[in-house]
Structures are given as C-alpha cells and as structure tokens.
Length: 397
Image (tube, one colour):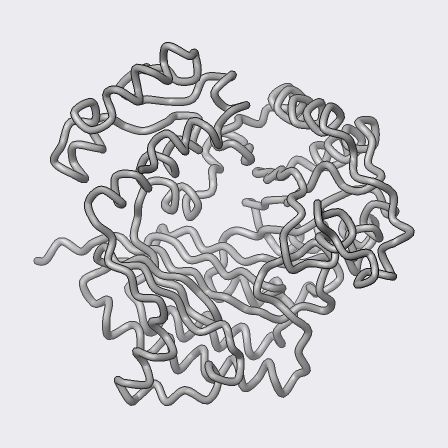
C-alpha cells in the first residue's frame, strides 16, 4: 500500500456582512445569489482539484474568510459534503471553521458539527463595545457572548477566540479587561495579535505614515493609536496574564490549553504541504507555490473542465522554490514556534545538517542572546522574540 503524503486544505469564503476598516483580507459583502453562484463554482473546483492530489491524505481543513458563517446552511453543508466526497480526510483530522458573532445560529452550528467540523474560531477582537465600533465590527460584546454560548451548547469543545490589541483609543486597562473577560469563558485557544495598519485599508489612510485623511472622512473622529510604549506593555501583559490563566504560548501570537494547539497553523509553520480552494486561495504543493485568481468574475466564469482555463485561473504566479528558498522558509516560519526548529527535522527535509547551512548565523544569534539550542531545537530566546523580525531576516539571502 502506498504511503500517502500529508496535506492541509484551506477553503476561502470571501463574503462578509461589512468590510472592517482595518481588514486587508480578500473579503467583501455579497448578496445571496452571488454567494450561491460562488458556492457552486467552489464545489466544482473541489471536485476538479481532488484528482490532482490522490497521493495525499488530508490531516486538517480550515474554512476561513471573510465570514464563512454568512453562507446559508444549505450552501455550507454542500461545501462540507463535497470536501468529504472529494478528498481522503483522515478520521482524526482537525476541521476548523471561522464564525463571526451575529452571523451564526444554533441550527447552523448543529449542521456544521454533523458535517464534521470539530473546531470553531470566533472573531471577537475586543470585549469593549466602543473599541469594536472603532474597528468597524458588526457585533457587540453581548452578541459575542450569545454566539459563544450557542457554540458551546452545540457541543463544540475546541474553540478559539481571536483578539486584537493596540486598537485606537485602547488603554492597558481596557486590554486587560478584554483578556479577563475572555479567559473567564475558558476557550481552549486564544489568538492575540497586535493591530497592523495595512496598506489599502481605510485605517492606512487614517493612521499610515503617508495617510490620506481626505479618503477617510468617517474615521477622522477616531482616537489615536496607543503609543509604542503602551503597545509594548500590552504585548508583555498578554503573555504574562494568559500564562497565569493556564494558556501556554506555543507560537508568537497564539496561546492554548494543553493539547489544543491549532494543528492546521502548526502545519503551515513546519512545512506541511497545503491546497487552497476558493477565491485567491494560496497553495504549496511539490515545492511549488501558486494561488487562485482574486477576481470574483474570473473565478466564477472559469471552465474548470478545460485544462488551459484551469491553469490560468487556478494556478496564477506559479513558482518553483529552490532548495535554498525551502530551507529559508523552514527556518523563518519554524522560528515562530516557541519550540523552535528541529535540527533533525532539517536533516530529514533537506539532507543537510542545519549547522552546515546556517552555522554562522546560528552562532551570531546565540552570541547576541537572541537564540538558543535546547533538546534538539534552535529557538528564539525571550529577547529574540522581541526582535523576531530581525532574527528571521538573518536567514534570508
């Protein structure tokens, strides 16, 4: 019997109720007909792509967006059924679905669970209603609580809550209050990111170094972002407080109860191959990186039964990575994990001793107190985490 390779699947649902002012993801509002047409094309792609990965077994599925829970129950059930039919999804596979407060019902959650979803990721961002309004979120904290309760009542015992710090007007006290309220609910996993002002967003026009206030009239009244010192205090508070509440930091921005680390994301950070399905979704297979078209009209009109059209629409910016590029990626992604990069794993993946390739960089980082070697892993020190972008850049040529 052929030993099959491990594969992760990401499914992109681009629709949302309203685009948040800080969001640079490929997402936008869409009416029911648009969502239905997209679902039909997505299922067509699922069937088409499955024939190209017969030598793989699926160890995790992540349905993200956008807001996947905005799809009708019937459309989401059809997507989940198509995935089961098309791919060899292992019985113990982690299947995660993102939901947003105010967009999910008890009936929908029951459907997701029956269809095999095992993990729910909820986008809260803040427990302060004022801060939620500043972000452009469509929900209140109370609506989040009601949605969270529905998730638990539906039987989900693996739940992540997404949080964002350094929000406009946020104080150290209000951030700690958010952490307190969330940990009292005892989710199994917490993702806590610091706000990044991305180009192409209304937030960039308001807060970017070369912002254009004329383009963001509705955001002019928003308060300033916390200063760098306050943002740094929030960063340290997050680690200290969540650790006190029993959450282990296993990645730079992710914390979990023991045994509840996000296996799908760990796969990304450790070099597991992945297939992206849906609008703009990225893939990494057989050392090649490519992505689907980000244009909705082009995606929905593609004839996937015609190989030339398939290649043009679903395999854009096809890039074959060199061995050097693969090693670089293995290092700078793996160093996001608190465990670090496995020296033996490096040999297994590339056939080279890690020190023969990066010995000089590793020595320099250790001398600067930014990295250490322990139990077969090279990892960032506490100081190294503070300068992680610098450390990771040292492994890039």
